[in-house]
Image (tube, rainbow, N blue to C red):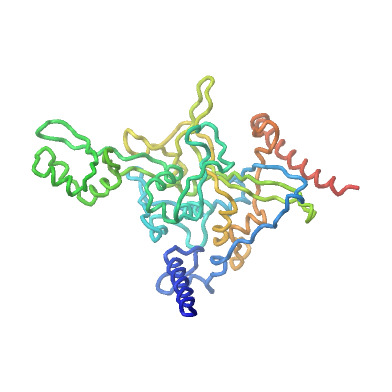
Amino acid sequence: MRMKNVLLVVGCMFTAVSYSQDRPQRGPYNTLPNGVKDGVVIKEEVPVRQAVQPEFVREADLVWSKRVFSRIDSREKINHDIFLPYDNFDGDLASGSSYRPSSPNDIDDPTWNKDQRRWSLWTIMLRHLMLGDLTMYRVSSEFYPDVEDGFSFKYPIAHQGQNDYFEVKKYRNEINGVVTSGGIGPKLRIYRPVSEDTLDIVKTDQTLTAYLDSLRSDPDYEDLFGIEITKLQEWWDFASVNSPVRKDGITMYIPSNNIVAYNIKEDWFFDKERSLLDRRIIGIAPVARYTYEEPGEGELPTRGELLVYDQTGKPFLFSSTGNTFEEYEGRVEEREMFWIYFEELRNVIINYYVYNDRNDAQWMSMDDLFWKRKFNSTIYKVSDKFDREIQDYKYGVDALYEAERIKEDIRKWEHDLWHF
């Protein structure tokens, strides 16, 4: 009996070690191949940290609270540590991103150009969405896209395992539909010289080899046999039965310089047990730029297409007619891409560094930055009877004054609490 228990423990340990080796490391560590150490010491403390759990608050001790929505703007200097350094993806406007990971081992492929020592919050988010460590919540329902209430975490893109992005096509397409810009590839169309027409290839329930063998003696399908078999197999496997076989789609992953802000949802509350006015972030959403079209009379504004900005700051939009990206010169608007539950995100960002402009030996983690609130944000909405944003009733500079007034009212509430 004792031997069985020992074997069970050893087996569990072996499984855990094997699993940890299959997952890409966090950090990143300052170690390179061939034993190269980029620095005086190996920085290995932050990559293995675990997030500190927030203080437990009893319902009976929660005597006052306010739901507050704020925006962390990339243009403010104090917020640069969240948005920098920028990453980028190899590729071009004609063929899209060269980065196409097929397994967790490909997640840090060299075609995704990242800094060696530290990453922006967007780089961390994107990496761990693909690794299955984070759950993405849509900004709206698929059935009512005009009502964007994703901050309530009602519309998750569910995944069963950590490798679903690489193994489940439906899940990968749903994630890519949010974090990439582009379109599906054109249909595989061949010219038939005998019939003197064109034909769209449709996938059957046969294997590709069986399908080709059934057409090999027909001269009408000579064009089909001229396609490289490995590429044809890839297109065939990607298509669904009775659906057109399509060539490679043109997609561009969104690099970090496309993220202009982060919207955060937080609760400001007074804990009676600790006699403390505290703040706790509930959710966070990256904000990017989309195309804007003026709504018609009596219509709600709808979400446009996600724009991709190159390293010079020029916006590009996918054109389905040319199956390529073209420079966009129209109006743009900033919208939330998706929401992430912050407590889940903390378990990831705890293992990544944030730059310290005073001491390179004392870099803190990204989680420390949020925990210590080393950022600035502007309130754009608070809980009220109208459930409206500040910009719905205040405009321009008045909206900024209104945000500061709300902060001052909360500060006065806390001050008056201790006034006898």
